[in-house]
Length: 381
Image (cartoon, rainbow, N blue to C red; front, side, top):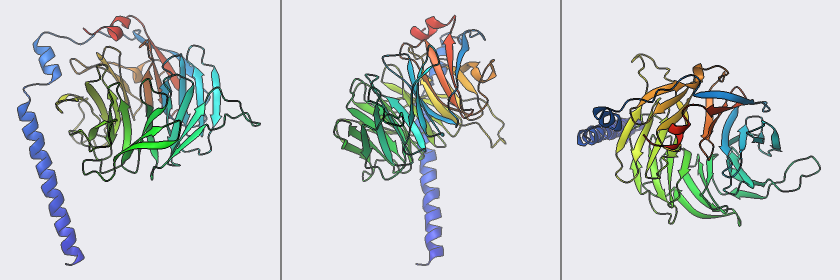
């Protein structure tokens, strides 16, 4: 068989697969009576009224000399760790903007960072295909740097995301450009389980993000435009695969109840999925000109403690606050005073839900404090 014939067959096979995907999506939509917003509005629910003073920038944290790529709040303290293109991790006191630690990394190409559940350690990973662990109470070396306490090696591609298993300082999950996720024993540095890879149900492209709940489950987002659910207790095939996006899934985040999760994608939309049924419950997207090929991509997402609000960062510097119930934008932090001047690359909510932190390619992090809508953050209406 000639190369031309093989190419023809490949193109035909791709067209068949795409056609099946389209038919499957049409069938799935036909089975759904309505989405969350349709149901809520039919029962008289309206969007939360959000004023320009209800969420304000109260602090800008400057110190990085390169683009900020990732951030994470400490579960037990008002600390934030950030990772930057400048090859450093910085641990900040969110109340004072003071740096408590500045860690120079052996590999400057860092993409992700995370706090351990006890707030005593931080993890980071990037283009070195490894995940490095730093104990913040370790003695500094002669150059003033904190030494690496453990290196987790085994991935065959860059480490795109890392997150500790809730309430387990010795368990960490990473995602990678090698199309797999790995559960690690941080104490020994050994891999406990590999998710994907040889399994037919694994991702078929780079895995970009992970989110872990407290019930032994985690979800991953990938360049194959899907999210997949996994059980940390066994390295079996994916429990479920979630379709709907038309581009890379850059961000995944569990809903506060742990039974649903949100996604953010290159296709410019955020989506809410039911973990158990696999149904897409809602799409959160702004209307764009059909001829506009430059739709801002969603880079990062987070939910308020109640789940009523979804915070989404975009490549054009916008940061929308979505009302998850009626699927309407109630605020855009990108239009407020003291907003970022570049892509929103990462964001996260403090453990008590009282503040939002955003990180940007403008090299800064910003703390946003809630004013009159603290009640919305803590109670579902």
